[in-house]
Image (cartoon, rainbow, N blue to C red; front, side, top):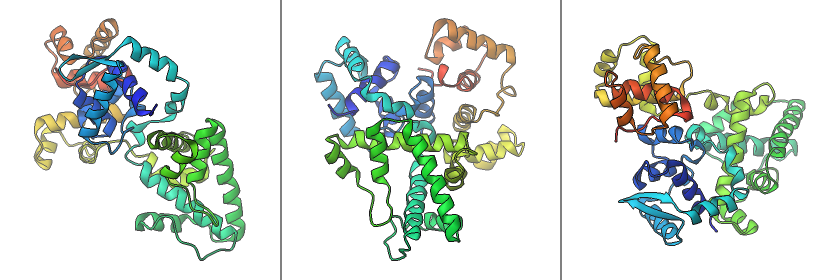
Length: 356
């Protein structure tokens, strides 16, 4: 069975009828909207954000119809699906197979994974060829930014190359020992080096008798693990951190929200930012929620009192209500923005979705 079937069933199970199929599509395809980013956090499905990157709306709808015909899900109301008993059984059966997805973090890394991989694979290829004294090879990546980055970091002396190669081997080996053999092998086979070019996803899918989506997700799970460890334990992974640290240390914000955050750090008021950037209030509110979700040091208390924050958190923990309207009805003196900021700050435990 293709991995996308239990993957979609698992997402629908976690969302449990609280979002329409279009919202599910935005999450799985990696559409950068305030809603899709927030929902990924709200429902604890950060790993699945952009898991089916590149899938079209038509392809996703066909997939839903197929899963529905298998009696794994049922339509509760128009375009709202819930998981059936058969679907629950499938998830239990597939739990071990899907274990590799625990290392995925699409919400945090989907936007930078390609840039980071280009640097890692070109650096590895260049270092490997240099150690063998082979300078006449075809670079696996020709992107100018990547090439310039690798050149700026490349060790000049032979001794230094040997030392860094040994350290990089240690770092990647350590990471691969923490994962399953199949995913580790796929990751290694994607790397290029002396006298070899990394395999394509299609080649690896054929070799392992897996669908291309599963091979891609297994590779991305290891890559995300590399990004996470190089960020959180930079001293233990100095080579990887030197290669990709400039990407992993930047908050996972959309470009527009990043510009808003930059102005906030310069002590600009909300009204000033709206005027400078010519933004609607609703857009700026989405940015504030996104910033509260992604940046731990961002304080929401300029926008809401601490006692109100505690009351909203307490209400959610008691009711597990995952829509904003009931929370708003319980606290009519609070705005939707204030509620969304509280819930965003609570991370994956609490929702930050729409008022529907």
